[in-house]
Amino acid sequence: MSKIISVQDIRQSLAAIANQAQAGETFVVIRNSKPVFKIVPADEKSGGHPEPAPTLAELTGKLDSVKTSYELAANEVDMIIHEAHAEYGRK
Image 1 (spheres, helix red, strand yellow):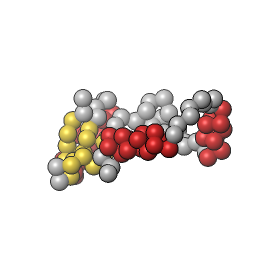
Image 2 (cartoon, rainbow, N blue to C red; image 1 turned 45 degrees about the horizontal axis):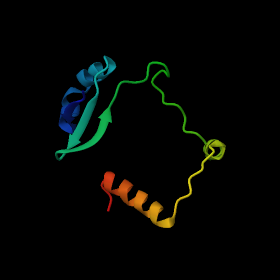
Image 3 (cartoon, rainbow, N blue to C red; image 1 turned 60 degrees about the vertical axis):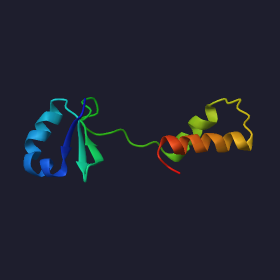
Image 4 (tube, rainbow, N blue to C red; image 1 turned 30 degrees about the vertical axis):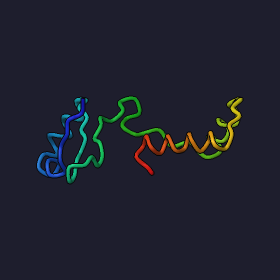
C-alpha cells in the first residue's frame, strides 16, 4: 500500500522519504489534493536503472510477429476507442 505525501512533505523530509523508499515503501505525491507522481523503490536487479525503451524497429517486429485474426468493423473500432477513453477519463 502506498503512503500519500505532499510536495511539502518532500521538501521537509526528503532524506527520511528516501530511506523509506530504499526499504521498499512506495509513495503517491499529491499537489492541490491531486496525485502528481509516485516515488517507488529502485529495481535492485537493474541497479536502479530502468530498461531502455525499445526502438520503433523492435516494436514493429514484435507487432508483425503476432498473428491476429481480428476482423473488426469500423463501428466496433469506434466503440472500443470510446470505451477506452471513458475508462481513462477522456471524452
